[in-house]
Length: 306
Ligand code: MG
Ligand code: MG
Ligand code: MG
Image (cartoon, rainbow, N blue to C red):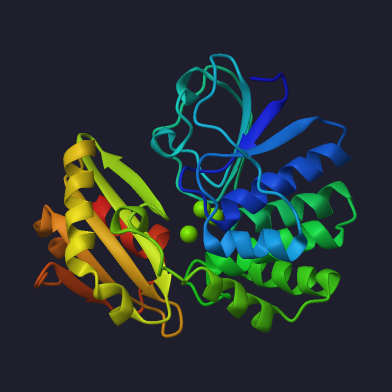
């Protein structure tokens, strides 16, 4: 591995993980630091839309880091969601908008945590705080991440900071946020050429409380029924995943980005889910009205009952 400090978001990277890595690298360059954005998994179709729009390459893919490698984490902190070898890397900094859990370093570090809707909103404020001009490229990277994480400001994770950032960035980018945003989100809903195994891994996160490990995966769609056509195959893939990874519960969220609801497929210790949401799981499914955020409306609710 080269000597540069590596910046990366979580495994199964989403648009915020990729864009905040790239923006962090740009910000570091303006500050005179040489860092390099990398990624821990495939670029999803929504993110590819953004990269194509800008005509830029995806960051290099890595699958582990060597002992002592200096790293900066964006859009995550939990080691279970990070790169293989993270325990022995030297974490210089974290910029994140998630709960802090299962995270420990041996040395002091920079840690910027804000309960905003998106990591890129934090980076936007960093640009302003440091007095750096925001160019069009980083404006589009940041606004794309904000649109993605907040589902065009409709997710309950959205804060005033995200709204303000998106507004300012749209001006710099000279972009109509709603048109661009819907095109971008729709690009991410094209699930036609994924196998079920790939589908449950596009955006999947592991959570743990003690020895209770569970997985919450999410896909965005404009039509829940389309995705459910492969329900049986999806369930088989979920079962295989749980067996291989020792997960006790798997929740697969099919999120309708037009109406802001989610259909959940639930396997494993279903009683935990039923208790968390006061819902009965029927035919391995439960409909979650108004639920679009894993971070705010699903993971903490399950963690509460474990
Ligand atoms: Mg993310
Ligand atoms: Mg994020
Ligand atoms: Mg997300």
